[in-house]
Image (cartoon, rainbow, N blue to C red; front, side):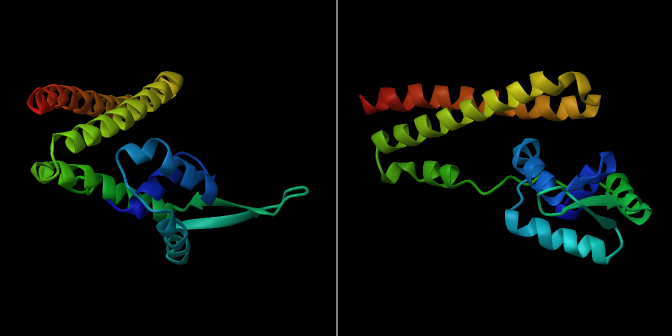
Length: 175
């Protein structure tokens, strides 16, 4: 899976602007796919050159023209090939927190507790946001999308449970 596959998948459903693609990558896709802002527009340029997408300039009153992106038949085939290909093994994003936590013995319990509470707060915030989006859009989602979001919600819940147990353990040791 790469940015090309994700973008083509988005365009399978509807025509989008580059900005709308960026928003989707930062929103729901950010929970299971990491992409940098710097890869979006070069990928779009390449997809257009390869004939996988087309760009249509839409005139707007009092605003700059808007470029709407459409998937071509060739792009649909390319995306279908990706979907029908073998599953790739999941890879986790690099985690500065996990690296520091692993070496936490070198900084003392207080610092480890601070890290755990910080990540606990962020994970809870992410869980709340994902749950809210899910409840808002659940009725219009495909069953496969529902499963995807439920996996993300359950991963956050498991992380929060593990952190809570770890905090209790570390706080006892710190006393």
